[in-house]
Image 1 (cartoon, one colour):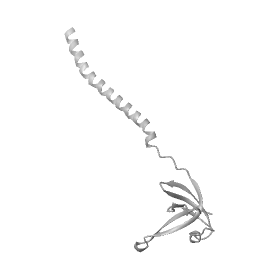
Image 2: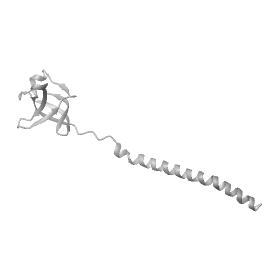
Image 3: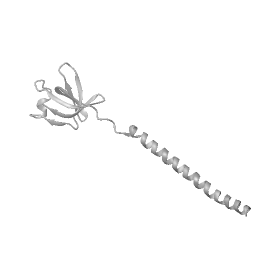
Image 4: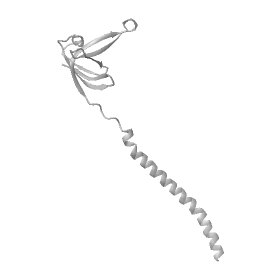
Length: 128
């Protein structure tokens, strides 16, 4: 009877040991996945919105490469010789007169609200 019990005990141990090992590995993998997900929230979080600024000056335009398709680059002149490159691609233009009236006219200063994107000022809105 004692000999048959040992054989049965070994059979059960052979079955239980792999199940316990697999359960421990699954628990460890779940713990590692949960810890990585928690720590990556700061890394993968969206970057904070850049601070919105308002600048005042008059708009200056420069035609670039007139012979091969001519594109116009806009700048904001502060009146002291400082020119800030403007990105007006998605700007909301809210001016009383046509935009061309304000270009190159120091008597018609404008306010430009936006943020700095590298060396350009990305305009959200241009208004008087």
